[in-house]
View 1 (cartoon, rainbow, N blue to C red):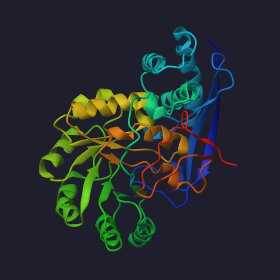
View 2: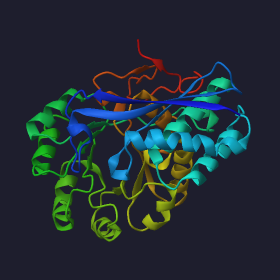
View 3: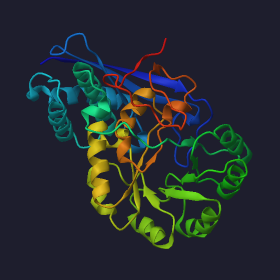
Length: 351
């Protein structure tokens, strides 16, 4: 088997500034992501496209992804020729997982490309390869930290979405949420990206209830499971672990700590690992949140393929971009991503 892989780093302008409580990628003005193209001599004429988001919080950069992807390709050599089958993808996923401990973004780029390639060879969409339904929840829309009146104006513009996710962890969190509620009637989800302190968070919970907040995502540092447990015991709102829930191996340690977990392909390593992590989370009784990074439609389409396993969906990364370099992924009238019968991811480079 000969696999050829090409990597391309894209720096994409964001539609609006996007700032979060911890260090913001690109100072909130741009998003940097890595696209890979994969070919196999066993499947001539086909190209699988993948994406890996290099989040420095998890120790990845464009350079590490471009360095690790060829090493991951080498780990596939022992599997023989690429077979057009879901069983081969399972074996490939196991090989990638054993090749290196972390580097979820690099694994994600290659796993997405493999699923796209095999899906094209079989004439099947990725969600069907994974044995999953095309019926998925609608996505919310995310607004970054800014002045309350600015966030409220963006919330007004995003009024078609059935829920909004508001980034918090700044000095004006309550004022921002009050301003958003003045222009938006639907559910609000808040994400502190590790930026809150326990006592202040506990004092905010009744106000969040009053304002119709649906959940609280990652209020405290990733390793402070004691603080997450403390707040969940005092909160009628579900606390959802994101930075604390990187791979499937983190799930058992979060039992009794939080009510929900946020699974992201760029953290856990692609659609194959995400399907397994979401299924395991449901077995353990967690509510499941499927999230994303500021990705192109490649990453979002791959995430949408596993979205039938999620209770909440936050797959809006491509909508945050000023221009998406890929076409073929569309929202329906209810803000659900359309999963069609197109083979693989069903995408093409934008003209």
